[in-house]
Image (cartoon, rainbow, N blue to C red):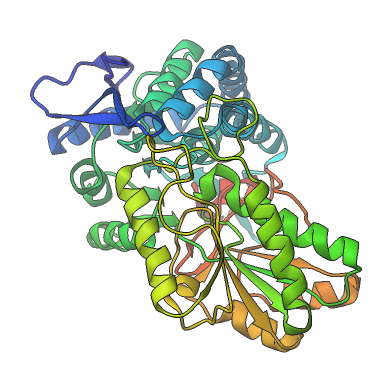
Amino acid sequence: MRANLHFYINGQWVVPEHHGQLPVINPATEQVAGYCPLGIDSDVDIAVKAASQAFETYAQTTVDKRLDLLQSILTEYKKRTGEIAQAITEEMGAPQWLSETHQAASGYLHFKSAIEILKKFIFEFQQDSAWIRKEPIGVCGFITPWNWPVNQIGCKLAPALATGCTVVWKPSELAPFSAQILIEVLDAAGVPAGVVNMIHGDGPTVGAAIAKHPDIDMISFTGSTRAGIAVAEDAAPSIKRVTQELGGKSANIILDDLSEERFAQAVASGIKTLCLNSGQNCNAPSRLLIPQSRLSEAEAIVKKTMESILVGDPNSKDVYVGPVVSELQWQRIQGLIQTGINEGAKLLTGGLGKPEGLEKGYYVKPTAFTQVNNEMTIAREEIFGPVVCVIPYVDDKDAVTLANANDYGLSGYVSGASTDRVHQVARSLRAGMIHINGAVMDRTAPFGGYKHSGNGRERGPQGFEEFLEIKAMLGMS
């Protein structure tokens, strides 16, 4: 049982005195693993005041000082990586191997890449007759999700610290354990008092208080599109900058010119990418677009791949898919699977209920629907589970039209033999990130989406820009 989760305000551990607590459920066991304290508006006020005061000094620090701080964070983070991975598995159910190699590792890599970018980043330069300065935007409010808990704070916090901003952060109440360890890392690394402040709590209370606060200059939010709309509405009266990374319903287009072997590899790889992290990824390739002429070939590969995926205890060595995060999430996925059946999609494999032998825990059967069309609910809505929709198309133009006919635009995937053809399809997709022929994520490439998938970008030099204001000084020689 994990206990004694504290707030971290102005460089001090703060014991919540008058607030409630929320049980944190281990999704693999359905047992209480600890309790998350719930903050209120006054906690946010205190944290914002500390961040505002700290900004006056921290904004003036040199690049070298900030590089030293980021390097110190890296050193301390490395010492705690194993603990962070264990916490992530316990709080949200990621298989231990995934928590170690991807989840916990991602936080480390964001701080590492921020160091490399900061070394080369130009904050001041001459532009015609003006001297241009890029200055830290101020106090930043961060609201982060449970599905990649340290990844999503890492890609916000690292550039914020690198550019001279201060922070008030609300981690997900479903994943507070890894957040607590990360703050211990920052404290041990010597982050100055008030530069980073953390308050546990729920979205309607602490999240809304952060979004509304007049002394917060920027909001960076990752979560559902529904919650993102609420954050933007709360932030609007104070005219603060709002960047958002929201939902997705990414298309994975397999072109018809691939050899039988490469076609099978592309389809199978897409399914495994979808099921990673139990399908709880905003950029998951959840719509598999297949040429009509090769639909039966693809269906056989999808079925075989789905049925080969091992679901089970996230602490077991060979398990690829653990539980989804909560009973609420499990129920939502079940509801959408039922909707797919009701609307006439053909269930290829998987379906309702838990996998055999896994009565305890929020486990979902890896599920594939075929003969899906874009009007079906399962093709439009983000399921956020290991569920794929196989959608047939006629030609490249039809594939692009189907891919773009969605409210989301976070990511896209294209596989094909002809380089020119693949590139043309990739250029035509209305999405922020396109993976060509199985290309994996690049930690320095900008991450973000079009349409209802959000605005702004994280990672790389473009991620730094979100935390900067631009000042033009005229008449300087």
